Image: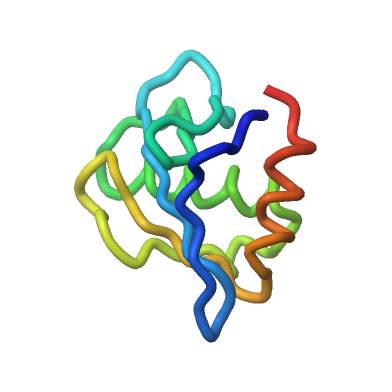
Length: 102
């Protein structure tokens, strides 16, 4: 996966990553990085937080952290979001995303 331009910032708890969620996709997967954001396609609709939960779940699985380690810190109701991943450093996130097949 090309992660050039990825917006990823360290925090006290871990790292913040900018993402863009595409709900109602044909399958749930990471689609790459566009405009500094990880694009996360999910089959869930954008209703009652289902797409947000699905996006957090796929990020947690990809990064090898528990689901509870991924939380949305801004953008709950929009497609563009900022998520915080607890317990990881920037280089670990980049390494996981590079090794993830599209």
